Image (cartoon, rainbow, N blue to C red; front, side, top):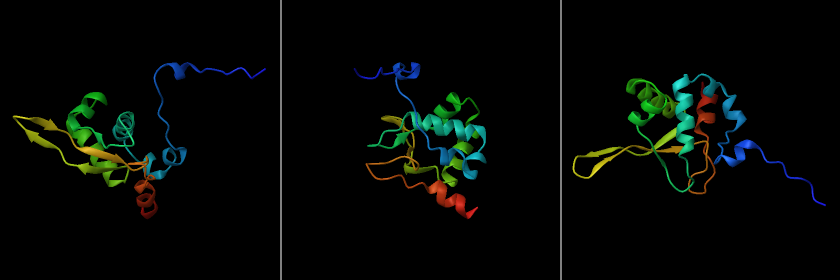
Amino acid sequence: MGRKKYSLPFDKRGGRIVTQLIMLNSKTYLALPPQAKVLMTLLHIHYRNEKAVDYGVREAAEKIPCSEKLASKAFKLLQENGFIECVEQSTFRSRTGSKSRSWRLTWMPYHSRKPTNEWEKLGAKN
């Protein structure tokens, strides 16, 4: 007879996010303000290997919750510390609509390529 398979409660709720402990314990990550850490999780929720994450300041401010100024600062800090990289700039067109910036998460694979982990390289310099 086979071994009984145990089912954990979170398995039935629709997914999970896995993050490397080495990143969570890094000085670079620990130095981030709470808004930037929450933003990383929000970006991670929308992550897909085959495309960049489209996420804007207004949406981040609403979900964190914080002011748009703090959300913008969180994006800037994540970019400066090598956690995210802008792949495509935002556009605003009154007739066709707007598009938020597209981000690549450097700690995750992108287009089936290994993660670049820029945060690790930048953290070694600090």
